[in-house]
Length: 234
Ligand code: ATP
Image (tube, rainbow, N blue to C red; front, side):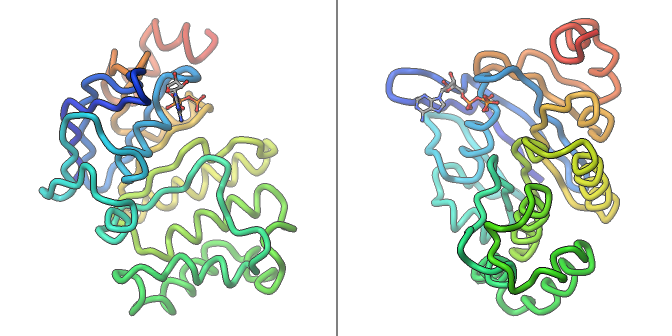
């Protein structure tokens, strides 16, 4: 579904991504693992069109999307749940969800999407008129995922979705991601809970200093001595 080939990204003179190549098959979960500053967020933001690639190609369903503006990428079916959640704090829960369906691909089916999101997150239904900024961290993360789903993505990219959540909420979050995967959603997951993300992932890539240094099935990377030592604290 997504093929990234020799992708480069620069911040001024500093190279943050160096010939990154990866493949994401439809209906699978792909984990991206790496230390702070390895380039995970840069990769997600380049795929989503927020950052402009310095070289290489990004093909989504056979179509080149590298360098397209982010609203176009979103309208082609790539959704992003950004680090830090990025909800609109002064808007209500309902308004935040409605904002997710403003892109052309999502408008006609907004009502069905809305019902689906509330079925997935009953807690949001109890808080529809509440300002989003007054929700708990876990609820805000649900809202961010719900808003992304309102855009009817075919591929969802999660950037550190568990950041700042309580252990119970982290479990709930992983349950949600597993449910989406079970429904056939294609997922890219960047997660500090490396073991949990590798368990979910059919395929995984390790980024170091902007380069892919290792890839394999989630299972293989879980068992890899270098991964165990660097990312699993074993
Ligand atoms: P983290 O988990 O800490 O977010 P990451 O793997 O997502 O790390 P990135 O945030 O993509 O890493 O950063 C990759 C590199 O690019 C780092 O060296 C970082 O300092 C640099 N970088 C990120 N954003 C900018 C920016 N706006 N301007 C300049 N350099 C940046």
